[in-house]
Image (tube, rainbow, N blue to C red; front, side, top):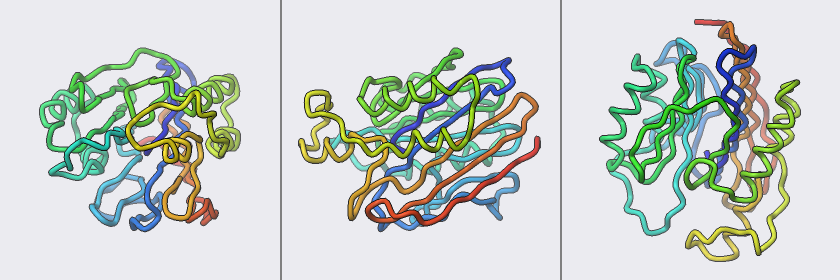
Length: 251
């Protein structure tokens, strides 16, 4: 994933709302959101190159999502970051335990941001800081830097989600992920990839011939453990490939 905005509201009738875009090279093979035959109760997209995932849910109200850290100078990781999502969804650790364990192994992976939820906690780990954090209630944004780093697309999408909190609607949440407006040059971050690439990556929804938003995902979880997932898949230049909608009962 390259952009995740989410609301964490324990005690609310809708405690977790997530809207996320996965940006990746179109040539990297992946399977859309579906049940995993080798992991009962896990529903996620699947990276067919390394076997992991970028966002999904699992038994016991588990949730996991991942973004990479944009740093051209970082070393290649020994392990695939997608296994962090898959491992938590398959496992039984609670969020504090999982984050503590993974913090000690963050150096095995290229830079990442990881969100983990278990219905009781929502936690965050930035690989470069390696300090697990249990999040307080609030509305957050996560792209390819630290949590809530004020990049233009993060601010726009986060405030778009904030405006929908009183009446969360999956179609409106999906619409905020489709914003392809490029940010003005004066607001762009400098992450070492050059101005042309900074422009390409500055929109909420990215489209180009070779790299862009591959999947837009909305998750709405209620206080009883019911979860609604919608994923929209895209190909080169933003071509719409199809939608998946799942309604999951408490497990």
